[in-house]
Image 1 (cartoon, rainbow, N blue to C red):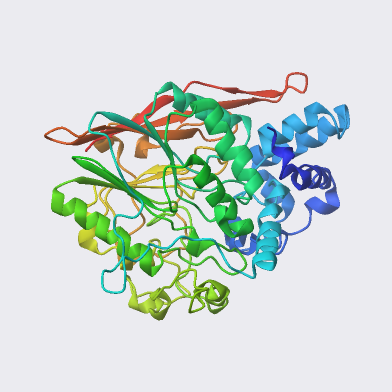
Image 2 (image 1 turned 90 degrees about the vertical axis):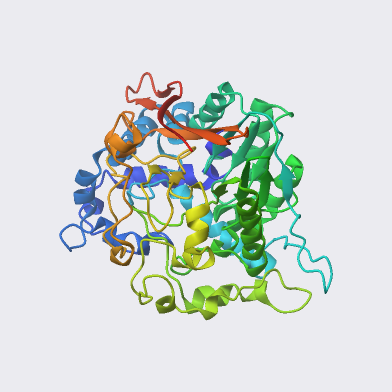
Length: 511
């Protein structure tokens, strides 16, 4: 599978055009402006230099690694031809899915997101696929055993990926490296690219996992926002049923001493038309999730919590609490009666009523809607939180009553090395929460690098995955290992290609 099988129908030709534009002085001297892409408005201040809108030439100097790839794509196409294997290989391995933080040096195939959302909105009238927690009857309440499965009472190794299915060679290499660790169970924390269409879910998620890991290893899924962009989530549920181990987009795995509670935050982050809104859980699912956590607490279990979206972020905005247009777009899903997809009472709570008391024009560093749904005592009890969404990895020190917050969204996409993926986002407000989310100090985490950071290749930050070794004995314990996979690109036009190294552990902890 190559990237151009699906998204590349648009991505490759448009990105080649962009690479040629970058060779024109008239283009380079233009100021970067909002509106190049549907999502560009959220990036402009990230690209501002000294408060002024920079030119494309100035951005080229700021992002030498990202821009170099586009200049070289131009050279490759000039030398070998537009339809050459070398041109497609260069796009697939060097540019595909790149550039979300280095616009205008980006894979123009990201436009597939917007196209898929428009198609899904039109075809489905704005409605999404979701399976609510069923009721046991009018007087019996919800079925809290729904989507709860047992963990075997033996030592288990669980492999965790996030933002992994791209179909690109580096993603497939990561999967092969995970296979070497012999996981008993694999969990994917959401997002199939570009937009989670049924074809992408099959070609990039289901088929490679079955081909590499075989039929015996159970694979559990929660969706991300991209899984709902294309077809309103229909593709995600199709492969979820093909894997055949869970009935819904959320699940609990419960054993003698440990449980994993995983939730669907993608449903309420399913469009990118309006300013990004904070994801959270619909009413049925938050009730179900809190019940599962309480069952674990009462039984003395260690609880691991997993989601696609983050409870807080150091580098990115988690969104706004309220937006009239964004809330209106959820109307078709929230219509009362038999056509109802889900219900939520969250929108009745204004931004200033949430943690931090910030007005809606001040984006918080923490997702105050999730903080509202999961009270401080719940966050204190949970042993560790794992999430993706950001295409990076961060090992956080204690923050907003979360002892172990672990971002692991770098299984399939990585930023170029001229982006500091650990830099504090200057747009978000963190003062009400004690300052920006802190990275775990090197000496506290026993890490090789400051802040327990991952490493880099010659072009990209490292990719990675996590393994959790669960020992549910008399004193349950979890050994978490964070693995990194380095990739290096050749820039010799006569020897184009990527070298992928073996995975190695860069951080581990026991809890």
